[in-house]
Picture 1 (tube, rainbow, N blue to C red):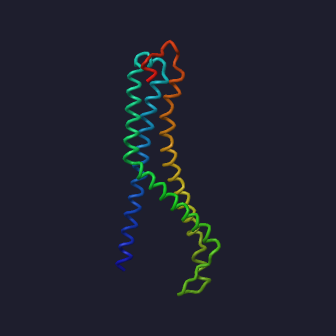
Picture 2 (cartoon, rainbow, N blue to C red):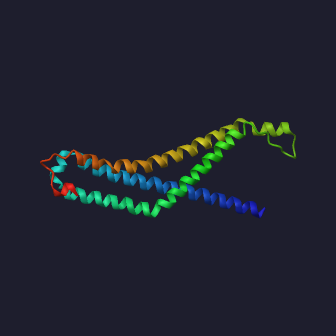
Picture 3 (cartoon, helix red, strand yellow):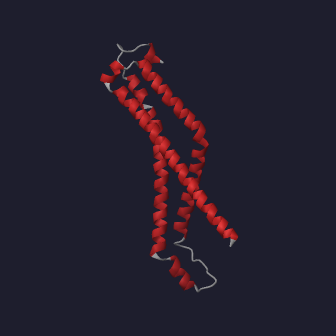
Length: 174
């Protein structure tokens, strides 16, 4: 009885920490994406480029890159562990979904027919499908948001190649 209660408490805490890690990853990703998108809007708008010097844009970009570096240094190992956990749970969930179609579970206290009826219900099938889809959506959402930070951060470099030679100065080259 005590072991079961402790296991339930640990399970709730682990689920909360896993969800909290996802929320932190998504929030930081959205923040960094919006920061780079604002910077990209300034760089892509020719009217604003005339009022803001390339030196100031370079400083803004340097601050954004240093922020990404600091966040990566602090959260990199946590992100890696989260991805490993996702891979483990996705493999486990897919194993459960695929394996339950072929394995008959032996239950000692009731006959095999009752056990088969219990494990082949539509509620159980719906639960496994929903939990698998939910897990995959969480994984893809956090992965794609984190990958989008890299994509948006490279966009100022593309704009730098399009700078006319008449506006090119020593500030643009840094």
